Image 1 (cartoon, helix red, strand yellow):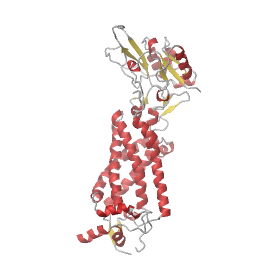
Image 2: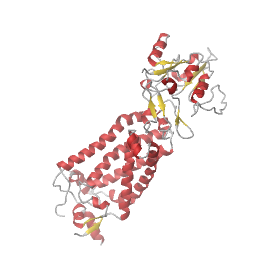
Image 3: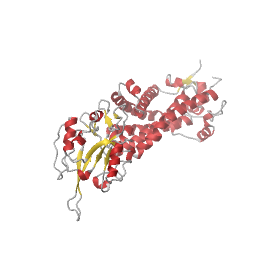
Image 4: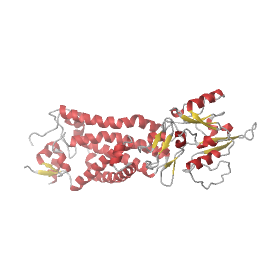
Length: 202
Length: 249
């Protein structure tokens, strides 16, 4: 019906799905281990199998997280005065008729979310590999166990917020994960500076 | 049922190591080749097939040039057990009604986190990468029999019984405070020491690593309070403020 603009490449879409699915399965099995839940272990084929799945999915998650750097890090680290205004108005999420400062390809919240994901995702991955590959090394394992669980707590707060904001809280956003495209008008309103860049580039 | 315990009195021990043999015999653990390290201690450390051993400590002084301490060593069966806290596999480590910390190798996933959680360096892993340690002869105790080590000890250095009774008896013969009486919620292995625990090769204040206590008391509850909190907040936000729609698109 209206003109579309591409916001995510096929590679970005695929990689995001890999990251999302591995993250959710890791989190579910993680809760299974954290609270020794027989039912969750049974779903994964027993505690021994759950351990293997958890460990090898950790590799998938890590590779996917690493690849995501090429997708989003540059945009996530680009800040200007509008980002401060965005923080001041809490992204407009506390008002029914918000006035939001003009945003680039990522809004400030998305930038912070990505940086947090990269920091705590790296922390949970590295600490996980140490627990997996250096078992019995008391000092390394105790530090890693602590870092793994702190990162888990942070991610279990950040990821659901991300899922909520990228789906029902902002209609029109979730289609990016499927088609990679958004209506031009929608983009011009949500990400005007990005659209400007695109048109200048033309 | 009352919590069971072993009371170890090192001064009564003659270092015969019948307890080591009895343990291997009852638990069907094979013998191992050992090395002479210039000490009567043999084998030198606990292994997956050695659940208990006598630590041999020489404490020579001018007054007492030949002072030998024999300290029977095994899993302490802590009331508040660090291994059980950190273990992520349901049923791999469990506590019996007698207060024994026992294990099920079929449910062990070989992650070795229990090694990091134990204040006494007890858990060992066998060739199949499964936990292996003293189980207090769980099967004997369940049938009202003392563990093999206590049963065989010829000098009364290892005695078995109801924990409270053992403590009361020790107090009667002059041991005001036993090692392990209060530590880690109360150990299932008590020691009647005449000297500082350090001399016998044990920590004065055994404790579960602080990071595990913090994880257990703070991070574990936060992991679901945080998740539940943001899910509830999202629902509330959706109902009160609603989604951010672009009406004109």
